Length: 286
Ligand code: C5P
View: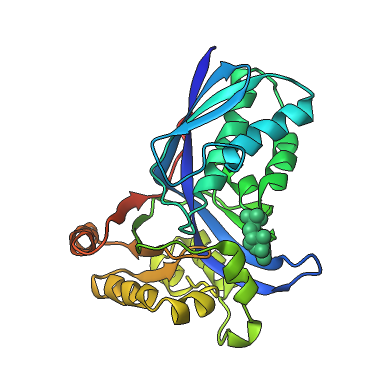
């Protein structure tokens, strides 16, 4: 095998609660992460050096790219010298709360492991993934999960029937680090009810699921960027059962049951926004 193509699906948070700031300055999370059918495609080719190229001009093509760091850490872990030529066909918006960089990094770990036949088990890949970032361990897997701690303590959830979403990313990026730095528990009026969310998940009660979708990081982002609230309101006006910000934003996700409403929301939002995606839950095919 000389090269391999790996899919790197975006992550959305169906509910996100922050329990508090930790001694290491990270925040203790309880969130439900879900992979969706908005994908980057990563082509890896055997090479002596690590190099990156991409269809996007908005991501670094050097060691500042998390995908580069993934290849480098894998080399270090194994004490190997093999490099890799990484090509990123970018579709996931950058700085959007969709873990695009983390998904690409996870795909490099999975892909290099296959390409070179390293045969590293999930635990070893998980360790490297966690060094790269809080969302990378989730991106390694192929199931929805409850994520605790920094986001790395994963409890897989049973698969449910495909969910349909509209994603709208306003024309600006938000830094995750800044959102967490500005987060204050005092501003959270009602915390998401994770138990009610999980009960609805297990019963596949889509209305109750929608009613229990919430993201406390909106308390930081909406006052700063009222456009996020406007998108949420418009999404609900179009018939979304729920509309919340994903991760640290600014992308808003709307959960739809009615495909006609989803289509008309898509048509409405594409008049004003460049990055609008009609998507569903992701099922990994390889
Ligand atoms: O882990 P990652 O590098 O992706 O996180 C980016 C930044 O987001 C961290 O430097 C930290 O400031 C913040 N963060 C946090 N609590 C988490 C995850 C991230 O405060 N659970």
